[in-house]
Length: 88
Image (cartoon, rainbow, N blue to C red; front, side):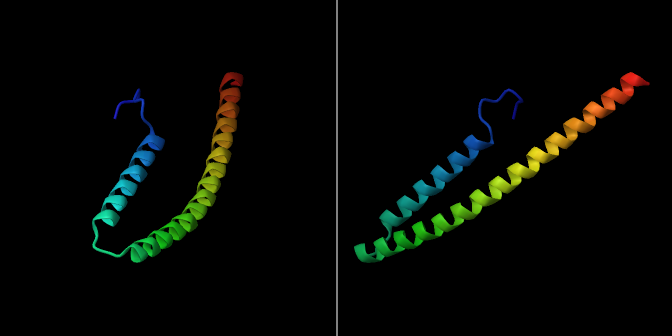
């Protein structure tokens, strides 16, 4: 992938999730189940998805915080190294 690509990781994630949702919808609509069974299965999937989304949200926030702190530390070290180099 080139450095000037218009699509980043977020676009890839959205495309993956949309593809998974479309595949699940097709599978659900083409299976020979009663309406009641299909609705129960949808409820179960929705509950699982909600739980996973809440866990993922916390994990993303945690990773973002760690990345922010690491970037700040790297910037501080780079600035300190620059001052040392210029002063020497």
